[in-house]
Amino acid sequence: MKPLRLGIAGLGHVGCGLVELVEAQARLRLPEHVSIRGVTARDRNRKRGADVSAYDWFDSAKALATDPDVDVFVELVGGADGPAKDAVEAALRAGKPVVTANKALIAEHGMALAGLADAQGVDLLFEAAVAGGVPIVRTLRDSLSGIEVTRVSGILNGTCNFLTSQMLSTGRDYADVLAEAQKLGFAEADPTLDVSGTDAAHKIAILSAIAFSANLDFSKVSISGVEALDLIDLTFAERLGYTVKLIAEGVLTEGGVVCRVEPKVLEASHPLAQINGSLNSVRVEGNPLGAVVMTGPGAGGGPTASAVMGDISKLFRTGRRSAFGHAAHHPTRDFIVPDDAESAPWFLRTQLADVSGALASLTDTLAQAGVSIDKLMQDSADAQGTAPVAIVTHRCPRSNMAQAVNQLAQLSSIAGKPRLIRIEMDH
Ligand SMILES: NC(=O)c1ccc[n+]([C@@H]2O[C@H](COP(=O)([O-])OP(=O)(O)OC[C@H]3O[C@@H](n4cnc5c(N)ncnc54)[C@H](OP(=O)(O)O)[C@@H]3O)[C@@H](O)[C@H]2O)c1
Figure 1: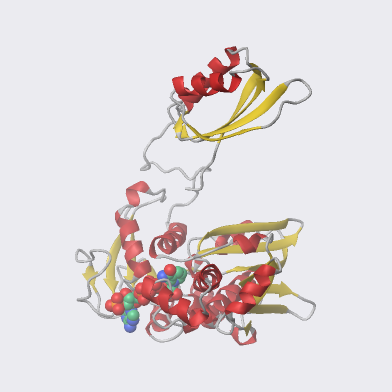
Figure 2: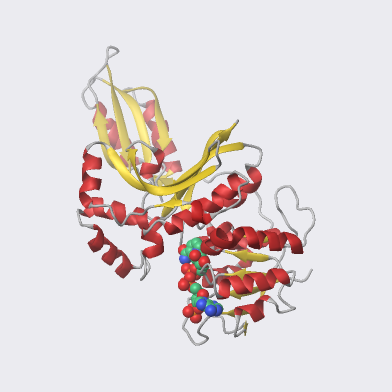
């Protein structure tokens, strides 16, 4: 079968991320092959994150969108109006499916564009427009279509999240932290869309339109951002056991759907209070489900391009897909038995007889098995005369630990079989 031919407009963070993914497609699980028919951006001579010299260059996004050899138009330019909107409309009118990451466009003109796509009988897909690499759009639209959603909420802007957590951890004020974030590339040169809450509002409006089958009307969304927050608000909240986060929410009420973005004070134990940096997290509540939460990278060229590719994979002409998504061109891989050479830190707990030299024989046995100790904790002997000891090891192979545990079980100074549990590190 011929590959699906993409026209990619916009070669910035996401566009270049997509070009790299297309070139690495042998490592992905796409049902068919994709190729790049042509690309466009504003400045042909700009040095880019990906080499696009092999692809045909188009001087306008609209010309690319309507090129007869383009099967799918991918809009990664940005902006609610202007060239992005013109090109998306042109592609849909030409009967071509569109994939976009443009939340401003979908939040402001999504209803009209969806109408145009329906009239033309083509897809308009925008997984990457909400929460970057977190696949919440299609999950909410398709997998969660069997629940009655009552509320959708979350942290949807990494820049605001970064700013408030930095203010708190460094004790510096908003303007200072923003200037540093811009220098480090964590905030745009013009951060208005982010810090005003508008970017999060675009995303929650899109999610709410899906969750509640609602007519998206962005003018009704209530928006306040993080610009007005003072350091003292954050420090006082923290001293009282709370965390301040910019929260976006859409709620179904009797009168209709209420969408709001505003800073909120959360109890420190609230799951959203743990979401830091550029992570996004979305919580969907409904009946009879309860709640599900999806968390992941909310921005960045690679993660966002992966969501774009996920949408593209919906557009292949393959009819029915196999139950596990396997395709003939995928590499053949087999399950194998787990390898005892896998290396990890370990938690070992045992009971030592209350006799002299017991601890020394424990540590000697570990040393002989090539296990080195990171932390050790011992309590006093209990009523049975044995003292619990817990050890955290440095990273070592499972086989070394298995050998150590077998040898420990032989020692007369050890009561019962030692308990061994692998420590899972946050990579
Ligand atoms: N970056 C993220 O983490 C992220 C996450 C989720 C969604 N998104 C969305 O993805 C889209 C792209 O974001 P990005 O971060 O990749 O933006 P970006 O790095 O600023 O790239 C924008 C691209 O659009 C091109 N462009 C601008 N005006 C154009 C025009 N008139 N005709 C053709 N091309 C034009 C630019 O060309 P030049 O390079 O020649 O200037 C540039 O290549 C936006 O809608 C954004 O909201 C981004």
